[in-house]
Structure formats: structure tokens, C-alpha cells
Amino acid sequence: MRDQLRVLKHGLIASWTMYSAYQTWRLWTFTWLSRLLIQACFYALIGRMLGSQQQVDYLLIGNVVAVMAIDATVVILISVGERQSGTLALMVAAPSTHLTVYLGKGLVNLGSGVAASTTAFLVLPPLFGVRLPWPEAALVPLMILVVGVSCYCYGTCVASFVLGFPSARWLALNVSYLVLMTFCGVNVPTSFWPDWLRAITSVLPMTHGLAAIRAFIAEAPASTVLGQLALEVCVGAGWLAVAAMSFTRMVRRGRRDGSIEFGG
Amino acid sequence: MSVRVQDLTRTFRKGKGWRPKGDQVTALDGLTLHVPEHEVHGLLGPNGAGKTTLCKILSTILLPTSGTAEVLGHDVVSGAAEIRRHVGIVFGGERGLYGKLTARQTLRYWAALHLLPDARAKERTDALLTRLGLADKADDLVETFSRGMKQRVHLARGLIGDPKLILFDEPTTGMDPVAARDFRELITELRDEGRTILITTHDMDEAEEVCDRVTLIDNGRVLATETPRGLAEMSGLHRWVEAETTLDVTGIPGVVGTETRNGLLRVKTTDDRAARAVLDFLLDNGVRSVHAVPPRLEDVYLDLIGRRGMEV
Image (cartoon, rainbow over the protein chains, first blue to last red):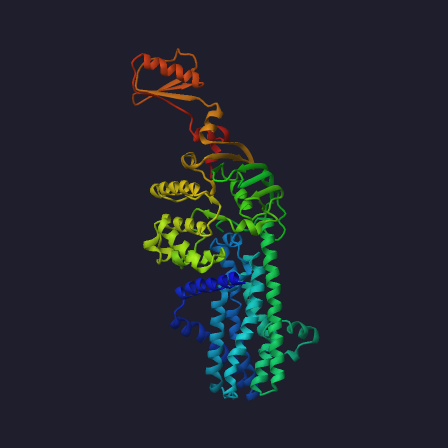
């Protein structure tokens, strides 16, 4: 366990070093964060066009949480990056667990997503007249973190599949993110979907976490909020378990078909 | 025994996708190879001979189709986890490095992946940076390094886990002559430390200089395994005698031809006995600048594999 935590730590250090080589806080703020804020504003303005503060509240909170999912699923690209930089074979031939390495290397993006989402949560609601139950609302960033971890586990799972199909990485990233945006209660309540589709959304990340945040903001009973959060944690753990199995399977397949190349 | 490979076969299907449907290609065809501990063993052969395929199987990133391969007593299929703790991989070229990390960060990262505790990782990182002449540049980004320095980072990374067996896949690719010479010295040092080294290379001089034994591979099969000198002796190739003279030696039994270049007479003989007869004749006639030249590894390689080995 200590070995795996150390791998996680050094994966994070390495990815932070590489991330900060391209990204300064100014660049992050004025390009990435502003793009995410504008996206959330766009949907909130649709709510305003519909003439309903209730719609504004729903769309804004949904999208404030959803912007984090973009970052959290970027881990899908990282898996292919290892193949492109020629480090995949070295990683597979190293004694550490492959999943831990990937988890460590994507943590920076998870942090970026949670930071963006938290900033959006602090900045945008006053602009759109969304009332929050302060000071209790200070707990929402923690809930966003829970949703972020869950989305990250989901992204890692998709990454394990993309490892075998590197050319599909952008498609996989966009589809993964859009599935969350569309079906998990961001813009459309999950109750809108037919039962079979709602059953699927219940095992997707963000569905329960977002419901917990909405319930918390609406000052619902703590049991409702905690129950939804517990479900979100379970969903995240489930995706992590599938990711672990999938990574093992993809590496086994790579060893079998020879698709793990020295130097590429 | 560090490496024990028995009747190893690996086939691939050409094509891409989940289930390629192209022709079947045999990369390794019943290959048998034994490499004892503390040996520098060279794998020589043309492109596509199966050298890298063998290294990939030994490093546990590729499964064999049939046959067995053991590394340090562990089977590459069932004992991969144990093998990974004790094997280092070094390949040539610029891939396999993160340009935005410094040399020190690179080594610390890979040390973690080799499950080294932090204190041990720091100690080995510092030691390897010093040993490979990277201490002054330890905190510079790898992307700013020359090709030779990048190769040294590759070497340091391969050694970070303190491996018992090191697989070098064409490690001197792109190295300048000075870096290549330093690399050869390092190989000798690593062997003297008790490590086993398996090295694939196209550089015959390098193989002749650093390898205790070499294996010639072609079409996935072993053609011969011997010491570089022994291989030359076994090959039955012509011996040459060189001398600064204008004497006529064509009447000596065993002489199959002569040529003169820049005043240097080169006599091609059938075997050692004929070469000795030519040497005696020249010395008896007062020629003092004279010597016999055994066939070199490159001659043996070209004789056994043919000049297509140089094709890319």
C-alpha cells in the first residue's frame, strides 16, 4: 500500500511538473477557467431566456458541477500520451501497478477541475441571483470533490479501453463527457428519461453527487444528501474496480498481441 | 542462469485492429538460448531477425506463442511480477523520456515505479547522476539535453531499480564516438558488478569489444552462439596476412589470392596453417613488418547472414 501511495505521489509530482511547464496560473485563469465559466453562464442564460429563476438555478448549479467533469475525464488522453512518448512499455515492465501510475498522473487534472468548479460555484450564483444557504454552502466544494473523484474513476476506466485504441482518444473523451452532460441531471432532470435510461444514469458518475448538491442547496434533510453522496462514492468505487480490471485486461491483451512497443 | 530460453516461438498476425486478419508472421522460430549470470551477451542479426521480440518477451511486455523463457529463474508468463523487480530496460533514441522533466525528476519518478522507498530512491538517483556524468545537469529539463545526454538518462533510468539483468535494445543509436566509448566502459563496469547484460546491436565493433559471447539470430532462429573470437575461429573464414613487401607468395600452398594497397601486400589464405607458412616465408626473407589478421566478427556476420543484414 505504501508503495502504491508513493507511486501516486511521484505520478502527481511528475504530472504537475509537466502540466506547469505548459500552464501558468494566468494562462489557466484567462483561457481554461474563463472558458468553463462562460460555458456555465451560457446554460444559465438559457434558463433566464426561459424566464424562470428555477430554471436558472437548475442549469447553473448543474453546469457549475459539470465543468469539473471535463478536466476529470482528460485522464483519457494521458493513457494515449504514454504510448506516444514511448513510455508505455517501460511502465508495463515496471513492478508497480499500472492503474496506480495512471491515477497519479491524472490527479493534476482532477485538481484543476475541482478548482474550476469551486471557483464557478463561488463566482457565478450571485451574478444570476441564485441564492445559496451560507455558511453551510461552504461544504459544497467538498461535495464537488467527491463528484470529481467519481468522474475521475470513470475517466480512468474509459482510458483503460482507449489504451488499446489510441486513435479513438478524442472521440472517447468527448463522448464520455457529453454522456455525463446529457444524462446525469446537468441540464435535464434524470426523471425526464425513460426507466431503462434512468437505470443506466444511476450507475454513471455525477448523477447522485449532483442530486446531493441540489438537495443540500435546497436544504433537504441531511439523510437525503448523505444518501446520495454515499451512492456517488459507490458509483465511483465501481468505476475504479472496472478500471482496475480493464487495465489488467488491456495490458494482458497488449502482451498477447504485441501492441506494446519498445519506444512507442 | 540469468536467461534460459527453450524452443521459443512467437508469431504475429499482420494488420491492425482488435483481431488482425493478415498473414501470420513468425518472429521467433523455436529459439533456444542460455545466458549465464554475469555475462555480457550480444544479440546480433539483421532487422526483423527477432532480437527485439526476444527482448520484449524477456522484459515481460510480450507473451510467447510457445516454448518457455525464464529470467532469473522465473517464467515470463507466470512469474512476470517477480521478473519486473529485477530487470532494467534501456533502448536507444529519444523516445521513452519525458522532455518536461529534469533528469533528477525522471529518475525519482521511475524509482517510485520500481517501488524504491524515497530514501533509497534519492540515494540511487544521486549516485547514478554522478556516475553517468549528469550531476551538473541534474536539474535541467531533459528536452534541452543533447542526444548523448538523453541516452545517459535512459541508462540511468534503466539502472534505477538496481537490476540483476539489463536488456539493452540498440543502446548506442545516435551516440557520438566518445559517448559510445563511455557506454562500452560502463557495460564492462556493470558486468563487473555482477549484473547480466543482454544487448542487441548492429555495431559489430561494439559487440566484439564488450560481449563475452554473442548469438547470431536470423529469421527467428539461432545461427550460432560463441565468444566473438570463437565465432571467428569456428567460421572457417579465410585468414589474411599483411606485410610491407613486394615478394611473390602466390606459390605457397594455401594461398588463394593476393592484393596490394598502398605498398601493403595482403595475402588471403585458406586457414591458420597456410597463414603460418606465409608468415614464415616472409620472416625468412627479411620482412619485418608483418602480421596475421584473424577474421573479424563483422566478416563472420556478413558470411553467415549476408549483406542484407545491413538493409534497413
